Every structure is written in structure tokens, then in C-alpha cells.
Amino acid sequence: MDAGMVTALSALIAGPVAAVAAIYGSRGANRAAREGTALTGYDNLAARLVAERDKAEMDEKTAEARAHAAEAKVNALEAEISRLRALVQQLGGTP
Image (cartoon, rainbow, N blue to C red):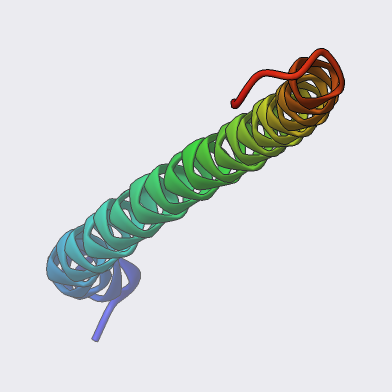
């Protein structure tokens, strides 16, 4: 075999090997892109869930504060009713 024949055979072998390498590399790149998209989507979902949880906790604290305020108001009104009933009884009436 002379040098020309070796070069020709090398070129014939190198072409398909390069094609196979390109296909394999393309598959790897596509898989990496899909995995990257999945991770990005997961991160976005996790961030949205954390934000929603924080909002729900804040809403819960607001509702608890309103409930405590309403309970305090009810207690104040019941005390006022008791005071007024006692006053009515002192004045000789029936509540």
C-alpha cells in the first residue's frame, strides 16, 4: 500500500466515524437541553410554590389577627351588656 491508498482509506473510515460522533454528540446535546429545561421548570415551580406558601401564611396571620380583634370586641360588648343590665336592675327595672 502506498501513501495515497492509506490516505484514501483513512478518509473513507474517518467520514462515517465523524458522522457517528456528530449524531452521538447531537443526542447528548438534546438530552442535556431537555434536562436543563426540566430543571428550570422544577425551579420555577418550586419558587411559585414557596411564594404561594408565604402568601397563605400571611393570609392566615391576617385572619388570626381579625379573629382576635373580633373576639376582643365581643368581650367588650358582653362586658358593656352586663354593666347595663346591672344598671337597669339598680334603677328598679328588669333587663
